[in-house]
Image (cartoon, rainbow, N blue to C red):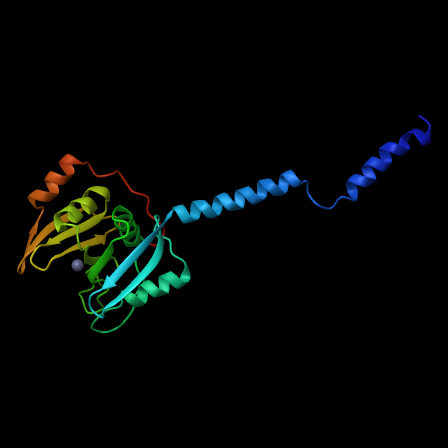
Length: 214
Ligand SMILES: [Zn+2]
């Protein structure tokens, strides 16, 4: 082949090298992927409005269904959930945040009123002292409904029903058996009828997805 016949091929190759930008279709695909990832991240987050009855103060935060939060939200939650007696703060268990996000998603637009979270002065084995427990109610939702919802939709948990004080205790206890109780006065009644009945009607999931760090 004479050298002159190669010129168009060489020119074509040279022009390809001169084109630094990726083809438009590649950019479009990348843009679409970014947009979809952002949408997915937003969809997996739950708006959680919490009213702290002790101070009082209302905050709205966004918590991932997997219990993930950004740094600012994590700090805000630790501040809001601080011990009401010592004002000390503690890391909040991610599994507890999974439950909190789930409850908020179940009752969208409603405010979660909480009476107790981290308690620095509890005994060491207390889940409140470990930042794994939360005592709350939701105005407009019967306590019994809230109690049964949490009990039947999560595992490795504790759920306490406090009808006299008007709140539900929920905690995340990784590696431990589920435990339910009814608190009347100073007496804790373990494994109450409602817990058996609720799970007979709606078996608990095998293992909900838990984030690391719980
Ligand atoms: Zn409690």
